[in-house]
Each structure stands twice: as C-alpha cells, then as structure tokens.
Length: 180
Image (cartoon, rainbow, N blue to C red; front, side, top):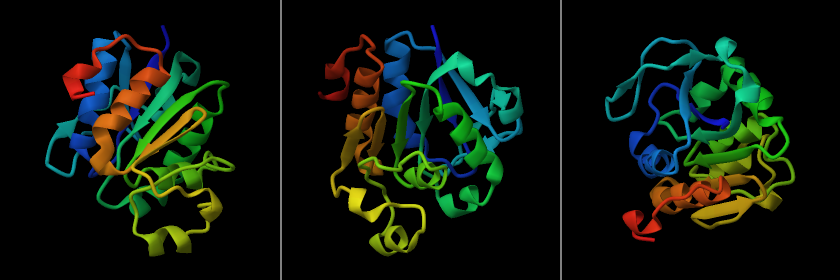
C-alpha cells in the first residue's frame, strides 16, 4: 500500500493535523513524516516532531497522497525552493491526492499545483489578492473546497477536511468519531 506524506515545516499547526492523522490510522494508511532535513521541527504550540525522512531521501513513487498543515508564517516557508520543488515532484504523479489546510495552499499555488483548480485558503484577502501565485477567479469562499484530487480548507474546518481526505483515499473509518 502506498503511503501518505505528511509535510512539516517550522511553526506547523498541530491541531489541524489531528483528525486527518486519526482517520489515516483508523483506515490503516501508512504515513511518513517528511521535513526539509531530519532535524527536529517545532510546531506553533511547541510540539516537536522528528521527520523520518528529509526531502532528498524520499522516493516519491512510494506515496499516493500529501497532507499539509498551515503554519504561523507560510511566506517564510515559501521562500525555500526546497519545499516548492519537493511539492512539485511528489504531486506530479497521476491521481495523487492532496490535502492542504489554512495557509498551506500558498505553497501549492507557488508550486503551480492550484493552476485551474478551485481552492480556498486561510489567508487575509489582501494577501491572497496581492500574491502572484493565486488565480483569483478560482478562489471559493467556503470552509472546505474539493476540486478533483485537491482538498483545501480553512484551519477551523480541520474536522471536515480530515474526513474528506479519508474519503478521497477510499479509507474505511468511522465518521461518527468526528461528529460526522
């Protein structure tokens, strides 16, 4: 069974991952925590995670999905070409499922993954509109937006987002655990 890549970066939002990770566990879907390096990564609430693999150690063909949380300063993460290149490489596979929440769709937009796709993003309107990466005509002002293989959401919709990710991966799980 192919795995889900969980991409982490400094100041990632821990709570946004909770439901999605629980559903992946319940559905028996293997995950791998991936970072720019194997150095510890501290989340916005102080939780420290150790990536299992650095970008240069990942065989993208082992994965069929990507899980991305928001973070305190996504623009700082986006300045790193390493993150953008990794996202481009891993998401280029046919049928690849992407779940991106809060500010992280900014990374997808910069990597060109959102071209022609409906999306939402947890950024202020001015930041979104002033960005050269977003296609404003494809923005949808809803909490969760699903367009083909891409699921985007505002941070506050982390439960619905996680449930939709599990369904997109065709996992067996109990939605009632999450109030759905």
